[in-house]
Amino acid sequence: MVFLSLNLLARSRGPDEFWRKRKILKLAAHYIGRKRNCYSLAIRAVHRALVYSTRGRQLKKEDMMELREQRIEAAIEQHGINFQTFREGLARCSIFLNRKSLADLAIWEPRSFKALTDIASARAKQDHLKSAVNVEIPKSVIVRGSIK
Image (tube, rainbow, N blue to C red; front, side, top):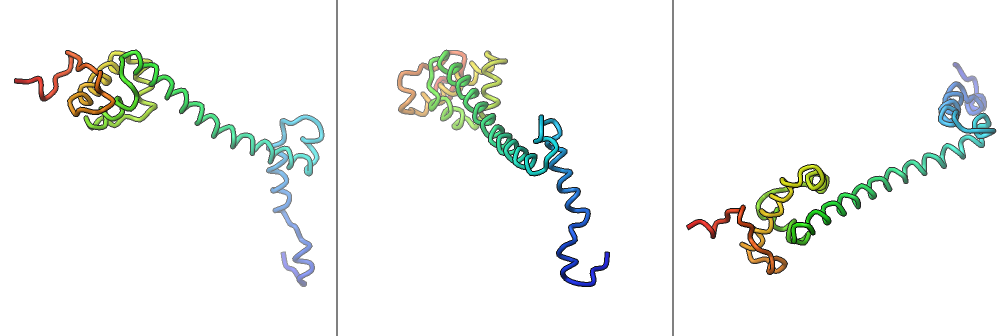
């Protein structure tokens, strides 16, 4: 398209406006009433919906994080060790598992999780951590000091 003057260039909206509006109206296709057909109402509703969906994704991540924390805390409490001692003991044994993996082990593999808590508590007791004063070394775990 050739424009003979700057005024004609500024007035020409061209196909871009059609596709820009089409994109918004496509996102509003499932709405009810004028929000579905009227562009000025549709754009408001679509922007609002996109804000809610963005916020919802963040809230979902926070909820999952909180759920995993609760599952790990509950499983650790059953084995008589606190969370700080557990994490420190695993870190000192070079066992770096994220919270998702630990929560899955706590739910679906309780014996494996028990083994992890035993290892962590034994290492914490061996390294004389303050939080592991009243923790007993399980008989199933062999540490450096027990081999003679």
